[in-house]
Length: 126
Image 1 (cartoon, rainbow, N blue to C red):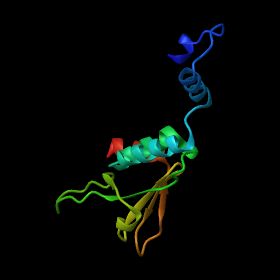
Image 2 (cartoon, rainbow, N blue to C red):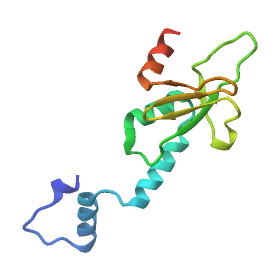
Image 3 (tube, rainbow, N blue to C red):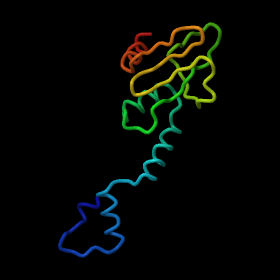
Image 4 (cartoon, one colour):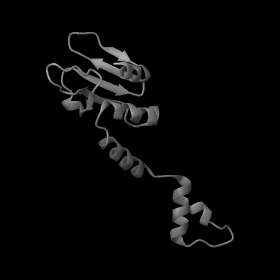
C-alpha cells in the first residue's frame, strides 16, 4: 500500500513521488479505456452484459450491448439464453442491453422493453 509507506517527514524520490501522485489522482483516461476494452472482451452472455451494467450503470462509456438468442436444437426453447454479438452480427431479431433494461427487437412485431431486474427474475422462474 503506497499510503502506508508514505512518511511526510521524508523526501520522496522521483519514482515514489510519481507513484503517489498516480494513486492520488487515479488512473488516466488511457488506462480507463484499456481496462474497459479488456472487460468488454470478457462479456460472452446476456448475463455477463447485465452484470456489466449492474456494476457500471450509466457511468460506462458503453451504453448498449447487442445480443441474440443462443442457437439451440429444434425441440429446445431457451428464450433467456443470449450471446453477446457485435452490432454488425446482430441479425434481424436481436436484443439491446443497456443500463435501463433490455429491448427485444423482432421484425414485424412491436419492440418489447424489460427492466434488468424483471429480466433476471423471469430467467430464474423460467
